Image 1: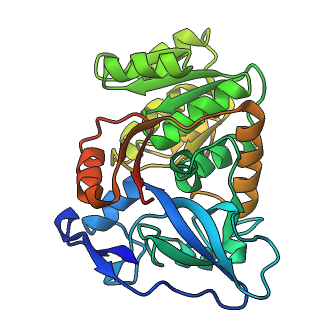
Image 2: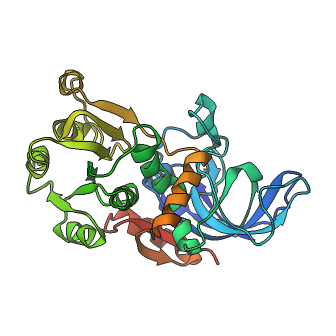
Image 3: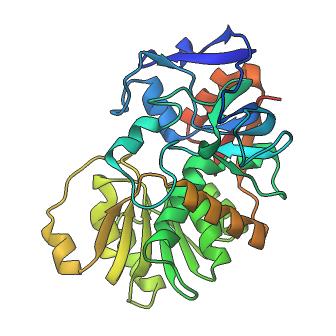
Length: 335
C-alpha cells in the first residue's frame, strides 16, 4: 500500500509517498480502505512547523478521511466488513468533556493520519457515515463539521430565529452556515472577497459583509440585526478580530473561538462590559460527531466542496488550499 509521509516543519515539498505492507487489525481493531481525505488549516500549520501540539518528527498527514471496512478483529462489535466509516479527530475523546490527554490522540498530528490507502483504527475511533454522502463528502466531516456542530449545538444550542455571525468562508464557516440555516437561524458571513460572499449567499447565507470595505463590520452586523447583535459568533480570526466580534454580539450571546489566523490581543474589560461568553472550541467528541451525522441525514445536507484532487496530486492540493481561494473544503481522492 501507499501512504504519504510529511516531515514536521519541512514544508509541503517534503510530502512524499512511501510503500508499506497492508496492516492487519488486532483484537478490537478495524482495517479501513481509505477512499478520501480532506485538508484543514491545521494541516498547513503542521507542514510549516507552526502547530504547537506534536511530538513526532514525521507523520502520515491529515486528520479527516472516510473509507470502507475491509477487515475486523475478532472482538469487534461496532462494525463489519463493507461498512462506510470515518475516523474521529481525537481517537480517545468519545463523550463528555475533553480531557487533558485527549489532544495526544489527534490524527494527523500526535498520531499518524489518513492520507494513505489503508489504515487500522480501534473500533471506538470510528463512526458510521450518513448514507446520502459520498466518501469525498464524508471525508470533510471529522474536524470542520464537528467543530461547527460543537460550537452551535453542544453547549448553548442555537435555536429557531436566532442570528449567527460567521467569520470567513472556509470549512468550519461553511458548515456553520449550513447548520445554522437548517436550524432556522439567520447566517451573516464575512469575507474579503465579494465573489465568495456571493457564493455563500447562493449556498444559503442571509447576508454578506466585506470586512475590507467595512472595517468595523460590527456596525453593519448591528444594523442587520436591528441594533440587537447576534446570538452566536463563529470566530475564526482570533485576537485580531475578537474585539469586532464582541461588539457584534448581543448581551448574553456566545462567541466560539476557533481560529487564530489574525493574531492580536484585547483588554478583557471589553468581554466584561459586553456581558458575552467566550469559549474555545477544539473540534469535538465521537458523541458530537454522531449527533452531527443525524442532523446531516435529517436535513439532507451535502458539504460544500471547492475542489477534489487525485491521490498523486496531494502537494497540489496543499498548494491550492494555501492560496485560500476555496469555499468550504478541499478533498483528496484515495480510491
